[in-house]
Image (cartoon, rainbow, N blue to C red; front, side, top):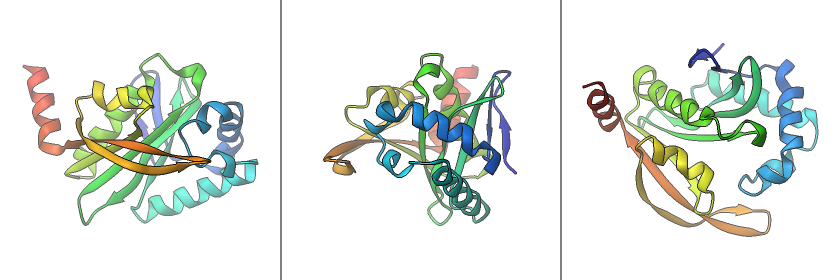
Amino acid sequence: MFIHKIDDELALKLPELKDAERIFELTDSSREYLKEWLPWVDFTAKVEDTQDFIKAGRSNFAEGKTLNAAILFEGEIVGMGGFNSISQANKAASIGYWLAPQYQGHGIMTRVVKAFTEYAFDELKLNRVEIRAAVGNQKSRSIPERLGYVEEGTIRQAEWLYDHYVDHVVYGMLAEEWHNRIKNTQQ
C-alpha cells in the first residue's frame, strides 16, 4: 500500500476498488472540462472502467512501472496524479495529473507535483522527472513552471485528442537541479 502525507491538508494514496465510485463521480462530473486535455475520458463511461483502471494501476505499481495515486484533500479524493511511467533502466519518470475544477486555484496540484518530484528523487533515486502538457493547457503548464522545471522543447502533434492533434511542451527536472534548488532556498 502506498500512502504519502504531504501536509495537514493533502495526502496521496494508491486507490482501492472501494474508491472507484468517487473517482468515477469526479471524472463524470468533470467530463467536459477533462476532455479538453485528456484522451482517456470517453473510455471511462462507467464505474467498472474506473475499477479496471485501479486494478491495472495497482498491478503496475507492484511491478514498479507506474504510480497512480488518488489526491486526498482534507480526507476526500479530489483528483489523481502520479507517475504515468517509471523507467528504472533510465532512472526516469513522467508525471501526469488532473484535479476536479472545484478544487483548483488553491495550490493543491503544485504541492502534489512537488511531493511526487521529491519522492522520485529521494525515495526512488531517479535522475530525471518529466512533465508533458499540451501547449494550450496553461493551467497544467503553470505547475512545472512554478516548480522550476526546465522547458526543454515542444513535441509536434504529440497526442490525439478525439478529433485533433495537440503539441506538447516537455518540462524536465534533474535530481542535481532539484537538490541544488532546495539547498539554495534553505540558505
